Image (cartoon, rainbow, N blue to C red; front, side, top):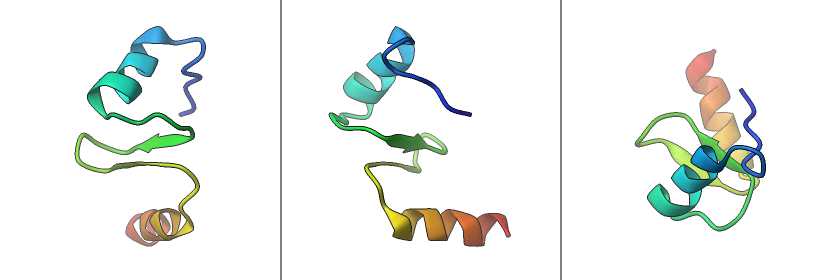
Length: 51
């Protein structure tokens, strides 16, 4: 699911205030598994987990 944080203020608050991210993109898989920015290693880890 893609959420535009420019349009969804609650999502923006979660990303900025709760997760302390200041840049996009932000990927949130769970409360413990999230990252910001383009990170191919994280994407590869996710693909392997879902395979």
